[in-house]
Amino acid sequence: ALLRRAPAGDATLHVANVGDSRAVLVELRAGGGARRVSTDHHAGDPDECKRIQEEGGFVRYGRVAGQLIVSRSLGDHHLKSAGVSCIPSVHTARVGADDAAGHALVIASDGLWDALSDEDAGDVVRSCAAAAGAQGGGPEMVVAALQETSARSLVDLAKDRGSRDNILVVVVFF
Image 1 (cartoon, rainbow, N blue to C red):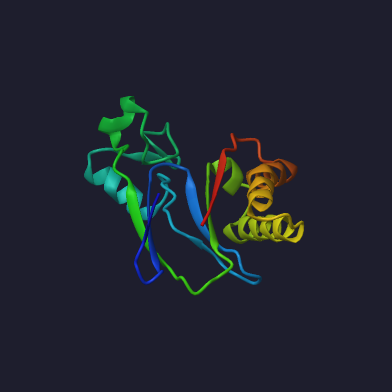
Image 2: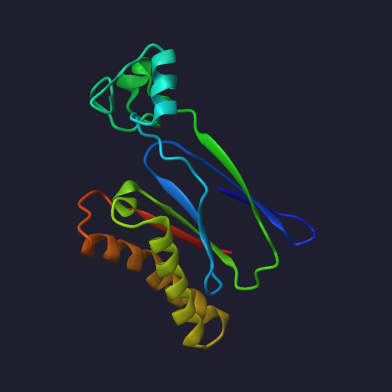
């Protein structure tokens, strides 16, 4: 992910991804939204299935060559000739400077997204941000609280909801 701020204060967020990780942009203001800024690459997706077939591969049981559920990957070299691609999807999103509460970018593996919706993740991050701000103590204390709680809270909730996949979460505040 790359965030570029313009002199006027607005910013442009660029996100590139492959595979089953996802990025969600969260508005931190009360009632703010959560917007997906990446593409989940699954072999069963009609566009991905078409791309795989055009590259000479096939999808069986929702998996590339009957083996891999993701259709894009940095690894899995043995399936590159079967249609698995390492070329990322790139998304660009405008981030307005008018939101004084700020934003967060949640980047996580499918272990999180199997158990939480984009909106659920936004709610958790907003809750962590509100709690960190309410405890006071200046910017350093708020940052320390966010570093301590945001990603951990998301992981814990996914586990509580039964996720058994690997769960990796990074939360970037800006």
